[in-house]
Image (cartoon, rainbow, N blue to C red; front, side, top):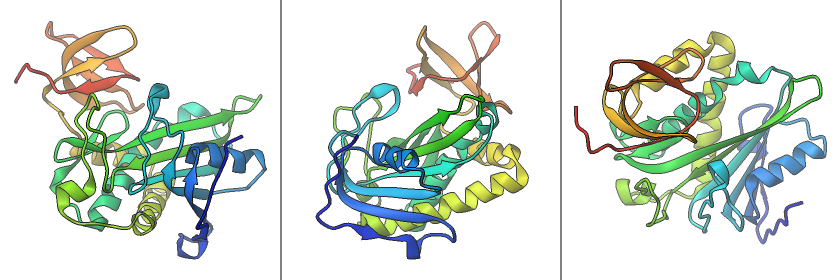
Length: 264
């Protein structure tokens, strides 16, 4: 169980989209952990858990997510009965929602790009990341999904492998975490219902329109290799299509993408 501290607990449900609950804490161990506790306690969801700071924030692959006060750390718990393979749209619709929330907050639209598989860039530097976790029942269907989002509003790490930045640094604007929280919840609600109504293809096309590095060579690291390849497209199942120097194409489902010294 996570240890949750709150000197200023706020219930923001009244400001959420219809049918969505929200709570906000000054400090939690991890918003994903608190969201999971809500699920274990049989909360019906959807519910957002927001925090001004985390004591044990984490990113993909167990990486530490620096979580000091000044940014927004938020997780959404959703209950649904769906096969995991039918949720390939989720990382991409979340990225588009974060992008819209940043635009609503004052960022310039053409400066915000989506980096495969789940990062958001502002002026080509990482400003937000997404961590999606789920619980699968014995029947093979999803019981609940937790979507964790960290956004650098005022602070950012100086030693990250991929260059990072903050909303405040790039825009010269300051936004309260709770205000940005509202923009994020609204933007996600729009993307989620668009996916339910129209499927993955419109999301895929939007993500490609705002993707970082498409058509260019990038360094790609997976669990088994570190290669330089051209980013070609996003497949209909969410795979990243790349072209190697020998002209062959490959599809990736997990990895990290970095700038490449090879141009063209």
